[in-house]
Image (tube, rainbow, N blue to C red; front, side):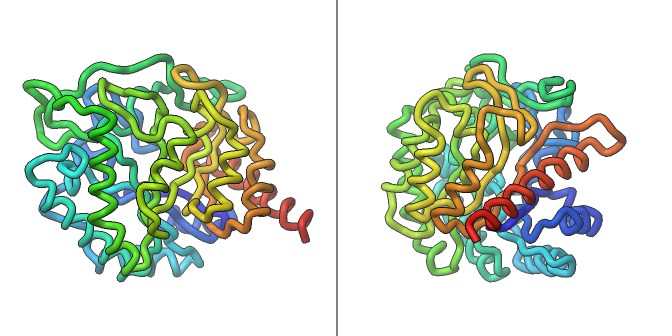
Length: 358
């Protein structure tokens, strides 16, 4: 197993690469989507939360990620001894009609195939994605973690309809509305996912790129009046069974899985890691279940994180663990301190399990 760090687009610079290397990281999971683009209620100092108007404006639909840019990021990270293990999330501007089953679906599927080819050519082995109409919505921010540290959580269901012009919690247009997103049933959403798999997984296999699906966050049956796909841990198996391709992988978010109301997290971690389906792990801890939960410091929630590491080690997991986000600590560098605490715990856990098992 490798220790890694997740970085947003504005953090892809030498300062943050040095920070990751100093904390003992070997790899990075990077975001190329700019969640903070014209996001009125978001601060780039932490993870985006947003409000009913979404995180911000999606990217340019005519500008896909270029291979030269991807190679440059790989090179600059490599100068600090870091590998790019994955890119996390497609920009809604590039694939919105795949999610919506819209009139430009064929064009947007080709966008994804082009992106996969470029990512593979740059030597990046994985792309994480969240097949969701609402995206990550309904979270709140407060002093929820130990000692009053700032963290995020959820205080109840959020089913306000999504205005037209917004997909995956980002605006595709300058102004939202009039009207709301067309209705969709769970069966229709699963069919859209199957269409996506059928169209892009063969290309991903050819290019040596895994596509890793994130569970729903928050894991509710519906968010903003739209259905969700993986809101219980057993539904990950349904997603795996859609395609036997080895490129069909999981972005295994422990926090989201722990927030689910059914199942045993340790049993499912054992099952999915034994199947070799976990591409990388979001290593964060929480307290509570949806619709009311709060994120905690990595050592202070409902999950026995050391037990998770032991299971992954036992089953030969060789991928990356990242603290995708962490509580903000009270100091002049809240994000850095929160991440340093999480990474220190994770590095010690990995060393302890390796030493224990020889």
